[in-house]
Image 1 (cartoon, helix red, strand yellow):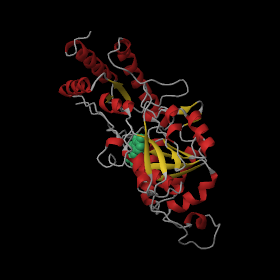
Image 2 (cartoon, helix red, strand yellow):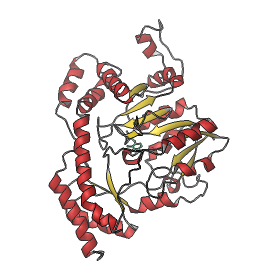
Image 3 (tube, protein in one colour):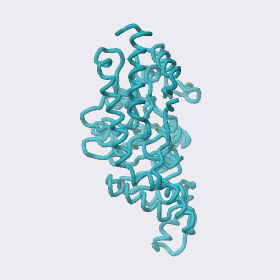
Image 4 (tube, protein in one colour):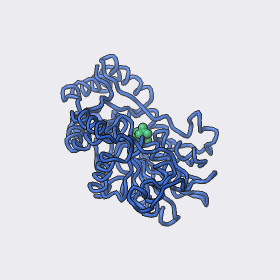
Length: 380
Ligand SMILES: *Cc1c(COP(=O)(O)O)cnc(C)c1O
């Protein structure tokens, strides 16, 4: 059986966990937390990083920091994970769903301006598969209409837009270290604050609405309840695990990219014949090999392909069901059709992608895909 994902352990996790546990401080914001945050700030030019218990939590912090009030509008791609929208819905926002580009699941930056109203507070680019959205166009809209840009960079660790790291461009950003992402801590995430106006408040919201962080830096002589917030910070145990992953980031990225390239080269001849489409990486974007996907020509074709792979012990999966037609939100959606989003929801398939996947397994998957188009689709 070739699974869809297998969490990779670098080997040092248990050691750092042990260190954290026996250091005598296992609650949050300790040595490992600071070490991880500092790494990201220095390597990617993020102004301020705060580890969180998930990317969803980091997004909820963004919604609080953006001061979203009931009926404020937030522009979100419909083709994304639930959390991108949910974090803002909990704050009372109305979600205005945007369509994907025709050739790329990312939000179509050219269609955002028409969605902006006097109630719009923020735009949420999601860098799908770690491939950048068209950030210059989105930041230009942000300036023109005075809107916040909050990057859902859950999949985008170590990826870039025109030499700028993803997560460093918007006012706020959120990353995920869920076990399905490139580097992991089981559950885990990180808030990035690039706009200095939000840094102090972010620390308070992070620690249950208290100014505890300031107190521990000696900036105030007592701490107490000063704002809203929650317990968004993870324990040192989570941070210690993440540190072991961070140490191997480069190695992990190289391995994933090499597997990605084998898929790409092996499947390109079929894509050139128009049998399906492969990921398209715009000139302004890098590839962090978060995922390898292909886009079939129809739902039936995708269903057939997934079934064929499964018969051969290979787990390929699809996602996302369009959020604008989800059970939870469809009655609140304004009724606009989002055809590109629906097409990706019906026809995109993700192939196994994880560190320990072997080259010969990738070759086998490629062979089975070619065979499927030959025998079942009879197109080769
Ligand atoms: C994984 C993911 C999330 C959620 O991350 P968690 O850490 O599980 O909360 C949010 N948005 C996108 C685009 C994701 O891929």
